Every structure is written in structure tokens, then in C-alpha cells.
Amino acid sequence: MKLGILDQSPICEGRTASDALFETIELAKFAEQLGYHRYWVAEHHNTESFAGSAPEILIARLAAETSTMRVGSGGIMMMHYAPYKIAEQFRVLHTLAPGRIDLGIGRAPGGDMNAIAALQAGPERYGSHVYPSQIQLIKDLLADASGAAALPDAHPFATIRARPLGPGSPEMWLLGSGPDSAEVAAVTGHPFAYAHFIVGDSGTGGIDGPGSMAHYRRRYQPSANHPAPYATLGVAAIVAQTQDEAERQASSVRLWAARVGQGQHLPFPSTETALAHVFSEREEAILSGRASRAFVGTPDAVRDQLIAKAEEYGADELMVVTITHDQMARRRSYELLAKSFGLCPN
Image (cartoon, helix red, strand yellow):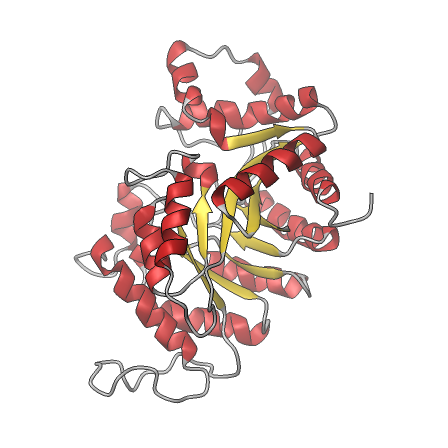
């Protein structure tokens, strides 16, 4: 099974946002050495927890620092942007690193209400009802690699081309956590990335995760680039040589999550801070709803759990999110996981 990494560029207590971005660059180079297939970076706004506010810029640096691994967005938050601009940005990226660029698109805001308002280009933001048409327009513009018209003559953008033109195009993925996103991915003929690390198995829209993935496959309409459905599962995992050490590293994310549940979007605390914290009943209740989202343990145990989860969802790939305060522990987690899946020699 192919493994990828979704990096949210976490900001850790005692370090800066600049540190987080350079840690992303170093981790991407290490991931390529380990044999990871994809490396995606996320988009977040107005938060002290994550540094990645402009994935399209970070992708350019990652592509320059690597040579074989696919790099891309996980994802671009489409509600803030015009499809034409996204198509142009990713055609530039594709020209710089042909055959290695992924355009992952989501429709979540990636920020609070003030950030959403500040990102609006005009008096009104794009509503969720226009998302399918945005996706179709980007698809048409990116398909227009030869310079031929991709849109009907009557379309108001019929004369528009997403430049630079050239052979091939970025690979488009649609991200989501429920049946609505699965439906858009299916009817437009795109690969689908399900965000298990955000919602677990419960999903959104009244259908659980496996149900949304089944809906995607059932409703899939073949496209030129993707004649069959194809899906990845985004999972949270922390791996160490022992269960105790994995749990110790995971304590940082537990405390961070408890704080987020109370509206505090702060840097990820150190393990020392986290282990010294006494959780209140309210915090324990917040964490109980997140218990099934993360896979924490030894390499073989986590590998077996991830394979079982991928089979349950019918996923073709896995995208792994690992956050620890200790960056060497984070690198080691990805290394142990890669070795357990046979990506690199033991």
C-alpha cells in the first residue's frame, strides 16, 4: 500500500512559525528518502497552531527540494478563491515539477469567521452551493493543456486559458469528510481523500466514513484521467518502539485537542507540560470524542490497524498525519512506519 504524509506545519511550544515551515521542508526531504509516495501541505488561517497559510507557495519550495515524490495541497480551501487563479497557480507548479504536483481541494474554511471575512475578495464569499461548479471549472481549465478550447463557445470564459500551457496537468483530488464531498468527487470523476483524522468514523452529513466512501465508489463517473474511482484515507498516527513511548509523545496532541475544544488554538505543548496537566471532566469529555481518530503504538501494531482501517474503507492509499512536540520523535515515527510497511530497509 502506498503511504503519503499530510503535514499541517504544526507550531510547537518554544518554537516559531518559521521553525515549523523549515521543519516541513526537512521532513519532506526525509520522507522522500524513506519512500513515501506523496507529501501534502495544509491551509490554515489566523491560528497559533499551524504555520501553513499558503500551501501553493510551500509546494514550490518542496518540489525544488525533492525529485521523485509527489507534492501537493491537502488542501486548497476553495471557498476563498477564484477557480481561474487556482488553475494558473497549479499549472505554474506543474511546469516547474511536471508529473509530481497534486491539487487537493477542500471546501472547509480553514480558519475562524474573522479570517473568512478577511479572505473575501468582495462583499460576499463563495457559498457551498457553488463548490461543484468551481470544481468543474478548474477541471476544464487544467484539461486545456494544448491551447484548445475546453469550454463551450457560449461560456463566458471560453477564450480563457490557464497558463502556462503544456503537456500534462496536476492531479486533482477532492477532500472531504462526508457524502456531499464524496458526491462531488464522484460525479466529476476525481480521486477522493477522506479526512478520518478530523472526524473519525462518524463522518458528516448523517453517513459514516465507510458509507461515504462506498457512496463515492457507487456514484463514480469515469473521467479521462481517472477511469475508475481512487481514494486515500487521511489518518492520524504516532509510532514509537514501545507503546508507553508512543503514548508519551501523543500526550502533546491530547492536551492541544482539549484546549481546541475550549476555543484555545495554541501551539502544541511539550510532553512535559502535557504529562503534568490534570485534565478536567470537561476536557476528558472533549477527548472521549476523539479517541477513535488516532492510531498510537508500536510499528507492527499501528501498521496492522491502518491496514485494517484502509480495508474497511476500501482505500487505495493512506495519508498519515503525525504531530509530536519533539521533531526527532516525529521523524522517527514516520521512519518506523515506513519500515513496517516495507517502504525502506530495516
